[in-house]
Image (cartoon, rainbow, N blue to C red; front, side, top):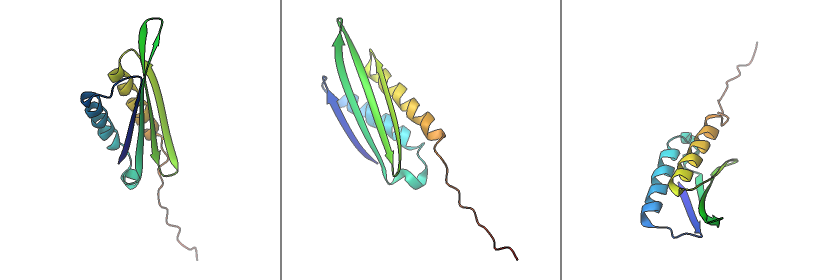
Length: 108
């Protein structure tokens, strides 16, 4: 599991980084075993100010070989944005096409 965390407009504290790693480790359990070795996460945390309110955006890109899952959420709290984005990725993983090996026997 390769993780790249980038923060823009806010300080990436140890607490927030630890929370992000915990959530991504939970998400990694939902990834099919055959794809776990090549799984890569890009987590982007951004804070913007608009009309006196601070909006936090969490963007997750999960790369699984040829498949890619993306989620983006904006809320007032960074932890909540991260939670919602992780749930969105989990839902995308549920519909990830499962490759099953079929054996075709030669017909006489």
